[in-house]
Length: 190
Length: 204
Image (cartoon, rainbow over all chains, first blue to last red; front, side, top):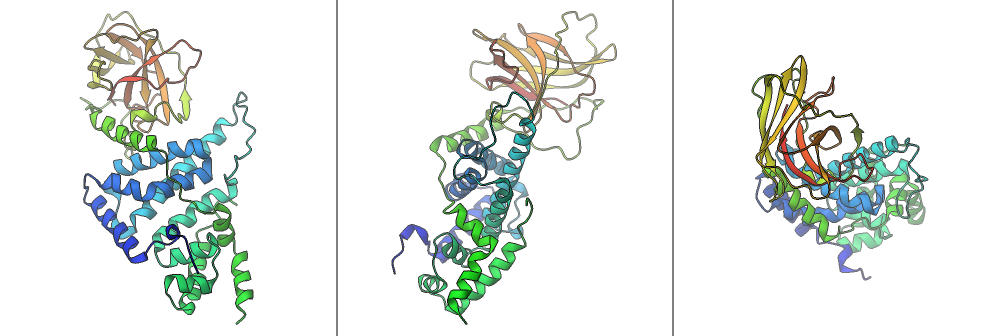
């Protein structure tokens, strides 16, 4: 069984590193914005790209980190990990942009036919996907990793158990439990 | 327990379907996005906050959102409120000052200045005074009021020289549009903000 090193981050290191960034952020450290950006901008940007397309994803990413930094004092570590907070801000930025698009679409001079560029999700799925990732960031590893390995990287439960060095029973239980929890987070825009 | 059946059941789950369809989500943004973030943070820290001298007729709402940096001005402007701005050349009465504060340059070549909301003959006006006349090149200077998040803006009119009075549209809430912005615009038929802000400050 081989797996590209990029697909699995050693969970303890990752979680501890994330917590350290969140701590720096909470303390208002000068380099906290850069560290948070380095850690979460691929996720924020990638989610935005899925939701609104590549061009506006850059605007959204920029907006999310500026907005997050501006109201950094409102981040409360007790309410959840920094990653979840940032994805939550991304979700709202995307929702605002889509609302705005809908408004401007009524202007007759707008010639776009509304077809989504390739790789961009349809309306019904956009918010659900962002909601899923927000919750996955909140849940953290290993459940997050288990779900992503199962559905994004197409691994069987048995393979995941081996990869993460967890008992098969644990993988199964966590998959079921996490799925149930994620399900409750969906269904906004259907 | 039939593992294959269980796997199949899990695959049908909408959560799984969605995660699968989206694939690997992480996608690093190009370097200029980070540069823009840095620029935004820097610009924001330079924006001078204006303090109202007395209560205006339109008090800021309690839940006022925080200010939004200038670099987003060019992008994603939502509701553009167009209003025929009138520069009032005559100034028989300097009026009662309702709010005031300073304007800070956003680019090195731009001057500093001040802005006041004055009431003259029952009408509210924005009075802008710059230390020097900016050089608009081939364009002209336009005065705007912005929402803090630049989700909307109202044009007040064209500024020539170092100062001007601009009638505030009746019903305009300065709490909603507290940022004074002076930009360089071109005569290109586009009524929107061109993104070249020279000076900015908060009033209202």
